[in-house]
Length: 543
Ligand SMILES: *[C@@H]1O[C@H](CO)[C@@H](O)[C@H](O)[C@H]1NC(C)=O
Ligand SMILES: *[C@@H]1O[C@H](CO)[C@@H](O)[C@H](O)[C@H]1NC(C)=O
Ligand SMILES: *[C@@H]1O[C@H](CO)[C@@H](O)[C@H](O)[C@H]1NC(C)=O
Ligand SMILES: *[C@@H]1O[C@H](CO)[C@@H](O)[C@H](O)[C@H]1NC(C)=O
Ligand SMILES: *[C@@H]1O[C@H](CO)[C@@H](O)[C@H](O)[C@H]1NC(C)=O
Ligand SMILES: *[C@@H]1O[C@H](CO)[C@@H](O)[C@H](O)[C@H]1NC(C)=O
Image 1 (spheres, rainbow, N blue to C red):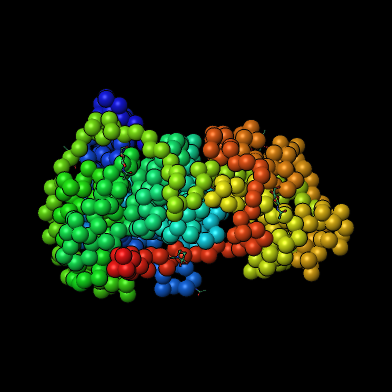
Image 2 (cartoon, protein in one colour):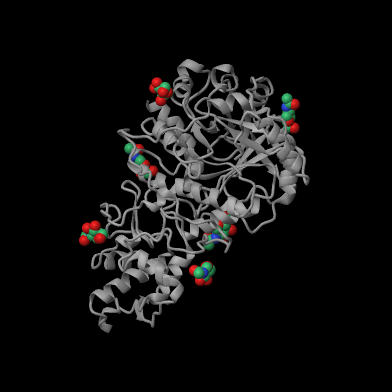
């Protein structure tokens, strides 16, 4: 993220010129607005959500929307007809080549905001973690997408917090933001903006926006999206709720936009909210929005319906949205004015419905788990199916104290090994039991699920293991001489950020984490993609 000073525009131009390989302007954040890097003009998002729905498939597969060149060639003319400058994609396959679609999009002046998660690998609402596995997934998408100048940003999570009962999931998303910022920096990538996409829950929405945008630049979100379904049918700025939301978000110090919008309670959708969204009443606070969604599916939010690989037909909504979005002329702020209003927001305190610690989970470090795992003398047997881990966790955690693998995002306490693989964590607690029982071989059994091995401690592991403590309740942060993330062997900077370093070594296990750790993240992501709209609309009706 470029920090614009009074000579911000000048340095921006210099940076753009220095970047000789491309003249396509990246989008940068200054204060609470987006700007083109080449000329300092304000950038408003005129977006369309672009991914076919995945919730129907029970096995959580998804169709990456940016892999098939034919599909992109088919759809981009329609996106252009809709004056689109941003698409949001929810799940990408990092193994695939995206260059054809990305360059077609760039030629059309269209930027991409990509969610880093995918249906089977996302931060869970009810059993959140920021694990090695998620870290690797996020890094793989960042690695794959960072090369394209028309990537506007990333989402580190979509509706992970759903209401006041699960705000303790927020620190895990904020840790993901922190670690991807750190990773991009240490990898020498462009600092691509990264944010969070929230639902529109009346009790948590303001505290949530404050939580993600507040604090040190190393860990705060660069932008904030809210999935907004309040304006249904022929509403108004005042009666829809938009006016109140605009007031509530007016102090936000980072760009905020509708990461989804378009209530479908009345059909066809006439999109009268578009004029309000890009009018002076809103543009000082909001940076536009992303219409949900391109494809017509069972949830009935489509702008087009697919006929075949080469053909789509436009829906009634297409015509209405097109005429609205092609008829806006929002005023353009300057980077100077945005910069002068930028200030740091203080983190939320005293919100009745917000209970999320500012102390974030540690950066997942492969080396920590490797050192721990190599040191054990009693481990889960290789032939135990991972389906059985959950039962084993509850058995073993009834016998030993599992604080070293548990997390609590409300109090901000995180076991030193809480980001390791399920197998490593299970072995760790099995070994704790074995040691507690005086290393009697009968204690390493669990009906054949555990096996004796000869553990060893490499000298390079000793500082990590002693920092973690035998029960894993210590903090390993800062115990590396050459710490790196688990993803890539890159030479990351030290993990000693003040926030994560302050995780204390005493933990009060919350009832949620005590003993009953669930092994497999319950996954709401896929369901969310299709159902949140309906839920969003319903919420409004209920209110
Ligand atoms: C700034 O550059 C963008 C991208 O090339 C362009 O769309 C916009 O019109 C330019 N703004 C001005 C004021 O020239
Ligand atoms: C998963 O879903 C895909 C696409 O719907 C299907 O082709 C595949 O057979 C499914 N796999 C399993 C194991 O159900
Ligand atoms: C809160 O969110 C959880 C998880 O999404 C959900 O199961 C629960 O029903 C929600 N509670 C309320 C009161 O909406
Ligand atoms: C915004 O900031 C002003 C000045 O600090 C304060 O009076 C006001 O209550 C804030 N508004 C919100 C919605 O937080
Ligand atoms: C540095 O990191 C590498 C890879 O994780 C590890 O093998 C090595 O032991 C580390 N060196 C030191 C001095 O800790
Ligand atoms: C587990 O250990 C933690 C940290 O030492 C301690 O605070 C907690 O009370 C222990 N829990 C139980 C159930 O003994």
